[in-house]
Image (cartoon, rainbow, N blue to C red; front, side, top):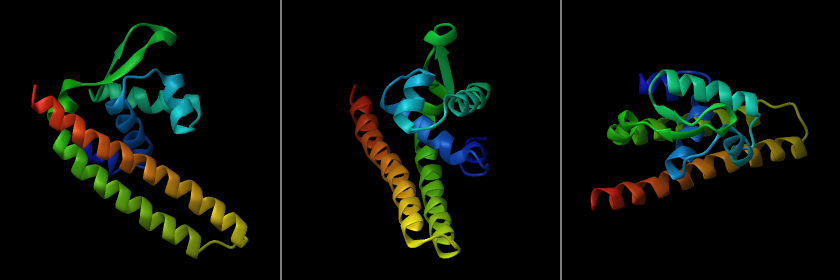
Length: 140
């Protein structure tokens, strides 16, 4: 299930970013939309999928809902890490194909590359933080 939700479906990269962000700190949909520079309704859509599949848990009601990672995901964090590496490799391949096959001007290609790289870097930074957090939690 985890591999399909993250690596096997079209919205996997967005869900990876959301899960990575929630691992760093619990957030509501609006905070996630701002942090990840995504549309609020897109974030809500992915949160619903993640909640339906028991990967996140909503705490609170309506607009005050804060999302946290579920114990199921926390227990399977190593699998999540492996899958996130696959997704990042996919994103890099897609980025290369998009730029090579683009008929846009060089300036537009550069803007596209910059945007895609910043999303990849953001995810890698979160994964780096997760490794330390997991190590610290195991010491408790």
